[in-house]
Image (cartoon, rainbow, N blue to C red; front, side, top):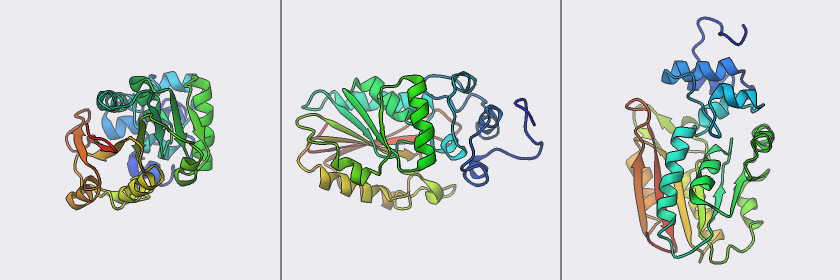
Amino acid sequence: MGEAGHPGKRVYDRWFLLGEKRNDVLALWEVQQYGRDSFGDPDYVSLYGLKPHEWHERGVRILGRTAVECTRDRLAALIGRDIAAVAQTAPAASPVVVDLFAGSANTLYWIKRHVGARSAIGFEVDDAVFELARKNIAIMGLGIDLRHDGYRHGLQALGEPGEDLLIVFVAPPWGRALSGDSGLDLRRTQPPVAEVIDVITAALAGHKLLFAIQVFQTVEPDSLTEVTSRFPWSALKVYDVNAPGQNHGLLLATWGWAA
């Protein structure tokens, strides 16, 4: 089937793209069909400020799992705006943004844009995701330093942040952590969110950190408490940009200072 359509009975939903299509580079019609089948919007997977047909024309390409796991423009822009609002209250200047699981790097792009960060660094350990994202970043001229490394080792190469505010975006793959019944269990992400936080705070103890953790509108209560109990200040936001029951949110939390 060509760009205009797809084999009739196949539904392009989350589970199909995380299953059969997980490691496939999607055709434009497949990206649009996923948006149409799952959200009623063929332009749902808008990235880097462009609709799917626009970024596809520029040469940008994504995998099936990236289409599901990436944060689209509308949501990423709201996330970036809210991070910037909290960052402005920090007793530090010249923020640096780090995305521990960069994927498409679209969220990192929007955070950098809203915060005015002096640098934006993303870590991506998966070979295929990294290679496509690296090419996409170059095509779009995003000014993002994408590193083919895991966050544990990559943090050691960041150097001394000094008095800068380090904004840490945490969005590990959800996989089976998201349930239609109980919502998102932060203990079942890959890796668990609390584990990620412990690694970061141990590596950067004594520095001013602003964590931005992507969540779902419904979060398993005990898993949320396990995360928020680690911080002196936190705030939870939910973005009403999808149909009820399909919305994402953001948990903002500080380390080394309080907003």
